[in-house]
Image 1 (cartoon, helix red, strand yellow):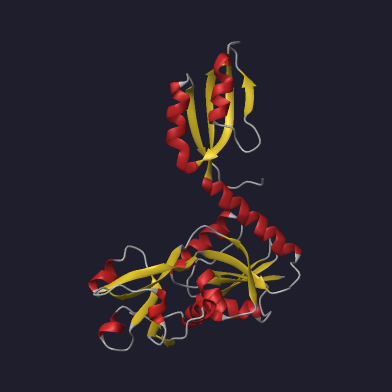
Image 2 (cartoon, one colour):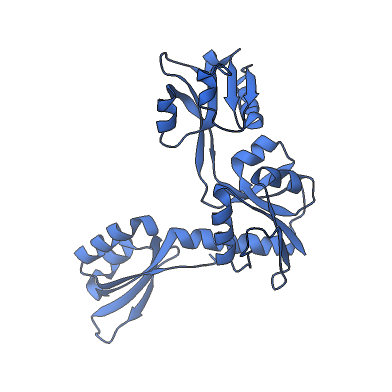
Length: 281
């Protein structure tokens, strides 16, 4: 039976459980449950601390897991990324006191506070920069003001918290992270894991697209199909009116309203949008 690690709490937990449900897997309903056995799919789910998941997978105790790219790199575990899941996004940046201009070279010899020492140390090493990495479990923004560090490396979203602490980001992002599926380095992918990956890929794709149906005069079909080319090509079906056809195509969710406007402008009518819950492409 396939053994999969799932985050038990934190920002990744809820979305991980949601995508697994959409992929057809049973998930726990009580947050106190540590293990759930899905006999229909021959999978055991283990709910673990997000920071520990890469370790369990890297040592081979579990065949795969869902965690953050940042947590995988920070752990140093012998595990590799199989696919991304398009949620749990975050950006890691350096930030330092805003009363002066900072460059990467200024980090050398300084104290860098972070909750991700492995990730930051690896990044600094790749840049050839030697610095003292100070590990903190949280509230790293206060470390400079309290004299623990000279600058920080942390997740940055709006930057409001940094500005309140008198800090400003500098240099390129250290890492862009998101939720990923991981497995042990060099391990053979079992059939059950291949199925899980295909299902998750189907959900990820389905979340990005919608199904668009519309009617269009025959004389405008070519123009309309250029607007909605679909993945391979749109499906065209005859209508009772000989001079009209029905068209169906997948379009990117983010482009839906623009595409509808363009279709209406070329004569399409009866434009319908339908969510896609899963697919195989």
